[in-house]
Image 1 (tube, rainbow, N blue to C red):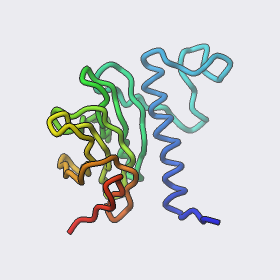
Image 2: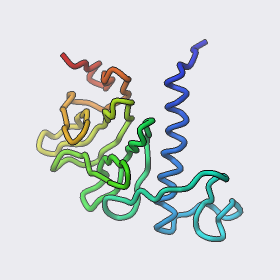
Image 3: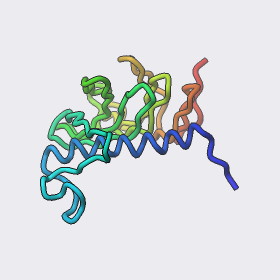
Length: 166
């Protein structure tokens, strides 16, 4: 039997909250919950008492989805743009496109407490999908392949192997 670490339990809770944040953005463009659910009559979902839904916006067409959230409030996910899906980071009301220029079809796997974001995106110039690690405006190419996971040490598991700094 596999025991879940406390950090994995926190991650599950953060993913649920990020999903709620994503739903808030979807509700703002008319893609609210199915009828019969609380808030369906107003086109949006109502959060539980004591909580609020934050519309984090979108990079382009209005569709986005949150993937993860750290304890500092950094929300990461993907948003549809005219070029396809791009990775984003949102903190304190500021939405930022973190996808490398020219890349598209981004998928974010997570953010750790250091604020490092692991994601994959297709690089048309190279003709392959690459995994990246982003933090505070700087993007590091991890390697060719699809991102799978990220830990608190900043190590990235991807289909090309395990990447460690140093």
